[in-house]
Length: 307
Figure 1 (cartoon, rainbow, N blue to C red):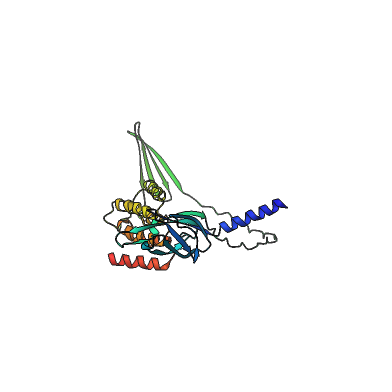
Figure 2 (figure 1 turned 90 degrees about the horizontal axis):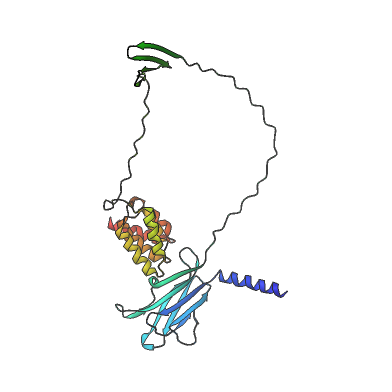
């Protein structure tokens, strides 16, 4: 009985963990603070690091209140799922913005650690019944059809060798055999239509500034480097460096976009990479990386403005 209870408890814990995310907040310079998530105070004493806060809402409100009243507070809408709806442990950095003269929490300063991946639902397969075998009707006998081929051949000995002439269905072929060489000539009737092979033209780039797109081996290496970065900001910076130094295919832009956790980061890179895309005519393919129609509309407006 005790073993069964432990097993049930374990299953409940796994089920709960698979349907919730985790939050962590920390200050860049070590300032201490309290965290209030969805109206609930998390830490009793002010700390510079408050980690592993469980939340079962994909989005919500958080408020950071500093121990020093002069520093004020920060409001933020948190997110514990990435754009692919995977539950994540999201770590937010709190830092002071010198230009704005205030503390802030930026999405670009966040890191994502996937806790559980969403599984696409599989449609139920309809039950199938095996039909009762029935006698097969007797196939009618196909009469034998004879195709006659007229073959004519003549052999003539010449001073230089042997000359053979053959004729098959209107095509005359002459073969001259000598001691050293054999020459074959084929005469095609005038009413015969020659078969020509189509000429395949190489695809021309829509971006004349790009000589050729980034090859797949180099691209996969670059993509791995982007994914190895923890912060969104670092990923975006590296992605922009790669785009500005190379010509990318639209599908390569899309794959880089999918390495970001936030929708607005994907949109920012899509705008930036348009200039460095080899096949701009295929840029609609990057839309596959967006979750919201508003992002597609904003990108389209941007493209129209730079054309």
